[in-house]
Length: 158
Image (cartoon, rainbow, N blue to C red; front, side, top):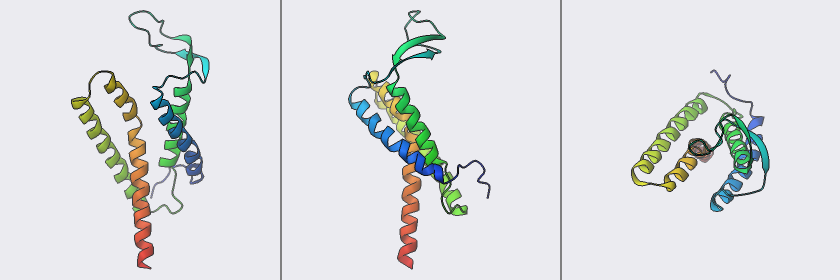
């Protein structure tokens, strides 16, 4: 079985250590409306976000980077958790990993389709922001749930 694209198992723990705090802080920030002043820094921006010529592309801007840091921590943590080998990596795990990823993509696009049909205005932008993070969340939840359920069935048979 080719597992060359997977990270070693030790990265799973590092991933959880990044993912859990990033998720908690992300939820807190979403209730605050993503408006913070925790980490201000001068950063390079390809497109700073001004409207109709009010901003200069490819320039340095002063901004709050809290959402950026939390997003990076979430993405790196989710990647480490999702693509790290299990302690016992076999054909079942490989098949489960692939089916969970496919399942996560399908559910993500069903949710996005429902959002496109039923949500309008600035609320849609919020849904799209959350939608960026749903694939790794759904993948991790489903993959670990089926692993847990399978381990429980095997232990009940013994």
